[in-house]
Length: 195
DNA sequence: TCAATTTGACCTAC
DNA sequence: GTAGGTCAAATTGA
Image (cartoon, rainbow, N blue to C red; front, side):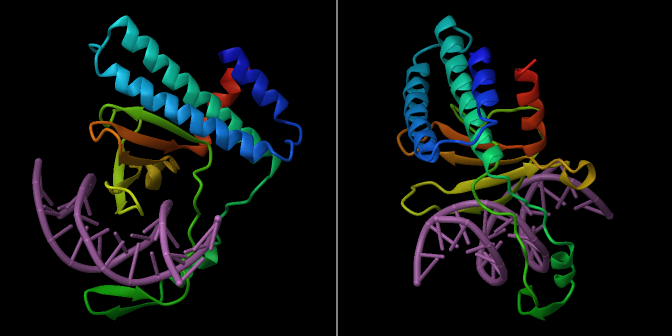
């Protein structure tokens, strides 16, 4: 698996085919369905059992493979996401309006489609190397459960850009769909896969 | 007192 | 125009 991921990434240094995006989306759908199925199967096995360890490994590998594919796509179409410093200055112009302050001028946000994202499905919100801090929650259209947004606690002091989205599964409320994105650490992971 | 969470507003991608 | 991601004031809890 490791070798496959590495080779996929190396090939991704060239321009992707026109239907690359459709291919990746199809893979993502298939992988998510597979992960959901495996997650359901996991419920019947005790934690640490060989079957469960194997299935968790498969889910992890799928997530990593998708991560590499996504990165190949991104590398083919370079983007700049540097927020304008001037934008933050605009936020200084605040006026008071009732309960909360309303900002004059435009805020600038880094947008959508989590770069270098990695989706996993777990029986509960798992602990990892990060310390997450919740910064938002939204009701999602056609979704029963709201989506929660987390970012790394160390963003202000260490500049950690990791973010995480967690949403309860529609099919099985006991499961949580977790999407993590960390531009800096993902690059390091990809480098390690090639060595 | 301070850090974490909540929640409505703001903003942008689609 | 709408859905969804982010901001930041208010609130809560240790």
